[in-house]
Amino acid sequence: MHSTIVWMIIGMGVVTYIPRMLPLVVLQRVKLPPFWQGVLKNVPSATLGALIVPGIFFIHEDIWFGILGFISAFVAAWLGANVILVVLVSVAVLSVYALLG
Image (cartoon, rainbow, N blue to C red; front, side, top):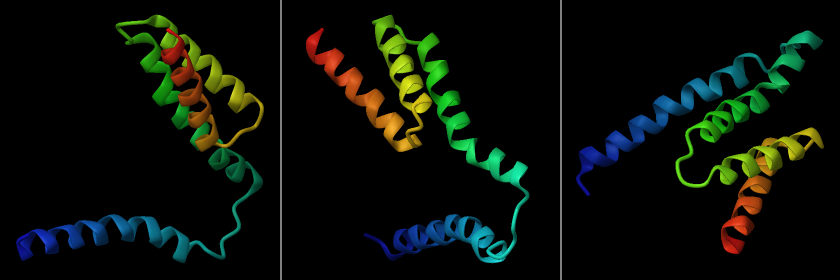
């Protein structure tokens, strides 16, 4: 691998690391009001919904993949699972459906 590619990868890593780390360092001691804590706590769920719901409408082969994925994600989220667990539950349900179908 050329050294320019290695330096480019290192540079991209630094450029993406700085914006992620700065808020943690700068805002470490700042206490947000409860309203904003609640808003930020719901961002992962809103993001998950924005990723899953359009996929339901644009599926081309089997509409049940979209419907079952949505229902399983909704139920897991409704029961209070975190975002990663919601995604894993949907993947597991759709994997079982694909194996059975």
